[in-house]
Image (cartoon, rainbow, N blue to C red; front, side):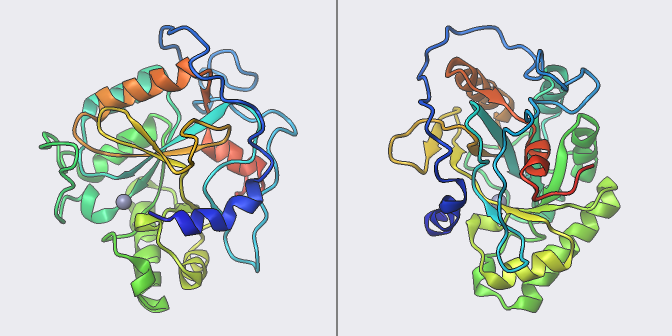
Length: 280
Ligand SMILES: [Zn+2]
């Protein structure tokens, strides 16, 4: 886990977590579309809450390289859902995301999506491993999900030279562009491991930001925090995986987030507001 790399960017977001998390202050409600009454979030617009004017702090990039981001600088009680790899391709999960208009960003990894590597079985035996290949991600795209870059084969990039890193990142972006129709602007390094060559390589193929995370979500919907006080904070980025039982675990997680008084945000819109990503 990339504790040190997360610490390296914490200065960027320092001072933006003053608001208490309001643990379980709200009663358990029914699950409503997360975008419901928020200004700018039309039913046919992007899913999730959108940033208010002046809400989001600017994320600075150093030395002309893409910034490395593990949370979004805001005081609003909003968190962001990201899902990695792509082994388990349950159509029921897409239906849930579409019908509830849940904002998620995926980081797709070729060997998982195409089921050509060794599947991640940490969530149990899969029923839908590689079931739809890239077609599954096209259905997610059509449900409003951003499909971003998580390499071809999930290597530890820190052990590789620049050229090899560039192949892993740039060929994955080219593949996603071919299969999905849009070139990724975000990159998540496997295991959160990266170095300066990673940032240079990512930039060379159009990546605008490197996305880490604040907490991971385990099978059963349990949140494993990287901060000692173990609670959600405004702007947190949560990491899940395409694992068996994702649809069930996801519902547990979304209910938990709402009970704690948090909304689900549209990550792309927030990154645009933080001026790390071009609009559109
Ligand atoms: Zn991964």
